Image (cartoon, rainbow, N blue to C red; front, side, top):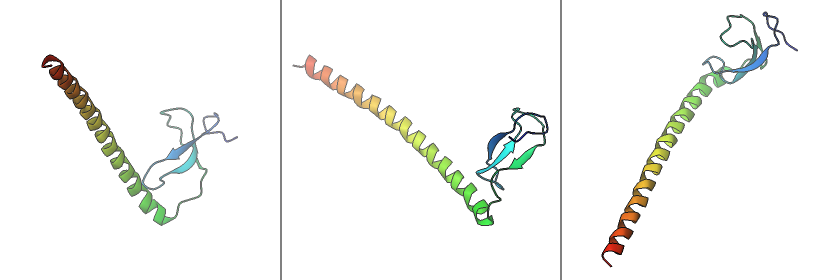
Length: 96
């Protein structure tokens, strides 16, 4: 078991910085702590990975935003279709 400088058992975290994207490390379990403890669990990444991974993560996030927007539009259009069919059925019923 790895123990941080605070004396607490260290937890495994994942770095999402541009220098170490996706790299796991041991860190202090206290949220917001200024404890300087850091122990890398994964080996250093090759320079090519460090260059490519942040761009891929940005693209994934951009695609998620697009999907979220499309889901909102889909929901809105579904409501429009339901309302229009209801009004059409009401029109047919009243004019029959």
